[in-house]
Image (cartoon, rainbow, N blue to C red):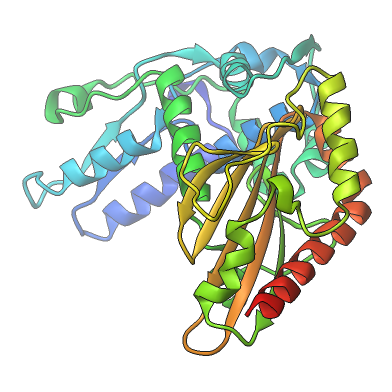
Length: 369
């Protein structure tokens, strides 16, 4: 953790420096990197930024949000780690590393909100007690509440690079804040687009819950059914979905949703689709656009309805021989606090619709076979 010991460190930052001292005292050569906020999926600091911006319409801004930090992107952090492998052996070193920009903490929240296309207001307050900080975190980010309170306590001190020896030793030239956040969001979208949800659920890495499973900022509702058909036969109704063939269950509700979307200025369900089973990335299917298609295997649709966020519908079929499993995942990425509320409010209807849809797709596949 970055931080100037002369200015006083929080217990959290001080403990990180102590870890480095303990490792060096062992007699083993140690290369220690000290960084501030890491911008990327999996970084607790970044996950806190995400939770605060996406779940709070008004951000409470104590005085410490004006303190400066030097965030660094995940890719740049890994570039330093790899470059350290080529350092001469036998010498312990401490390197302070950071991104190109030195910014107030508040600017990180604002930039994330800008790139997610949401507007957030900052409410200045003179101070915020640790107890109140923990309470807010328990409400918006219960998963990170305990360590998040420690991190927020660390924000009371500036965390910027003062020793620039890393610039002389390494050829890494880190990105600025805007590029680091853009790259993090791009990598997340790419990861989700290629995630095989059925593998995660069937391996027990994800547990089905009412309302779906929360993955980062996204909610995933997963359903599956086994059919006594080869995978290519089971996939055929999926390849024909939409347009004149409809959505297999409660088509009248899909049409009502389309009319409501048109009233909001959207395209609704009127665009239909091309005939047959031919699908290609970029094709329109009613209110969806095809993001990925693998014949007999997978179809990923991105919603183009007016929503407080983004949504996808993914179909996957897997199996060998005479039986296969049809998997259906509804993925929602709320961009506003009321987007979460809307999802859970409508979830009883979603549960009925998505359960009925996958059941009817299985029946259609068996009937045609």
